[in-house]
Length: 129
Image 1 (cartoon, one colour):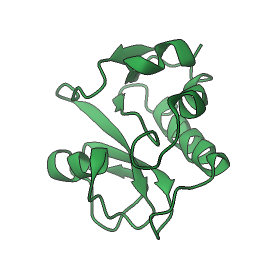
Image 2: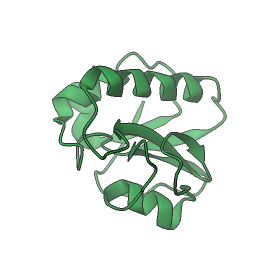
Image 3: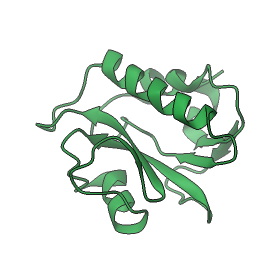
Image 4: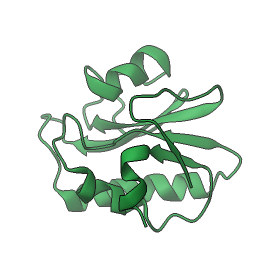
C-alpha cells in the first residue's frame, strides 16, 4: 500500500477516489474536485466516472450514511480495484470531511486490501495496519 500527503492530488493516470452522496451532487469538498477536474458526473453518486470513483458516504438527502453502509460501499470499491490491478487509485479521506466521520472509523475499512494499487492519505498510515 502507498500513502500520499493529505490534500495532494493524484499523478497522471491515477483515479481520484472520493466520498459522494447518492444524489451525485458533487457540490463541495473532494466531490467538487472530482467533478471539476476528474470527470465525476452530476447525478451519479457511485462508481467509476471519468478519472474518478465515487464511494457514497451520504444519502440522496445529503445525510451521512451509517458506518455499516459506508463499510459496504468501501468494500464494493475495493472489489472493483482488486479486479483491476493495472489501474492506480488515489483515495481521499473518504467520509472524513463533510460526512463527519473520524479517520479512526473509516481508515480500517481499507485494512484488508492486499493489492498494491491504492494510494491512501498519510493520516491513515497508522490506522490501516
